[in-house]
Length: 110
Image 1 (tube, rainbow, N blue to C red):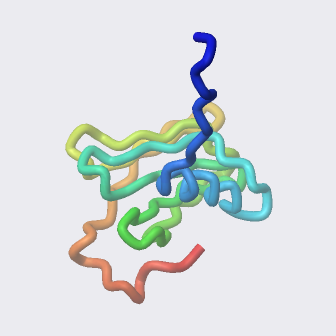
Image 2 (tube, rainbow, N blue to C red):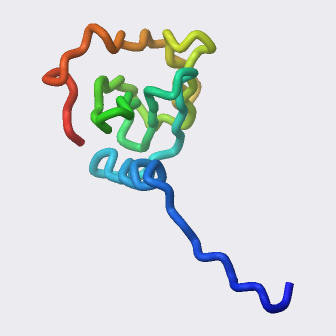
Image 3 (cartoon, rainbow, N blue to C red):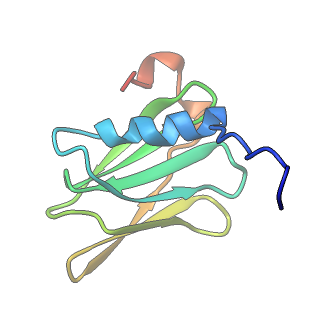
């Protein structure tokens, strides 16, 4: 469409958080992310053999789930109570920590 200005790219605040996940650990490579059904938690899986569960309200890690190899896929169950994560030839099921049982001190800045 001639005459119309080109739209300027914008980056919503939530995109900054996802970009920050590149610092997952020493490798900086995040392969997968998933949002829980209520939109309050994000899980990320990476080359550092970890799934991190992030509380979006304060952008802190509330749990780290250890794997033996890189994590290539992660998803929340439909009820949000479990995470399924996949590494080479293995799928693991994890209980999601209840937010009401976590204090601010139990979360870590990352």
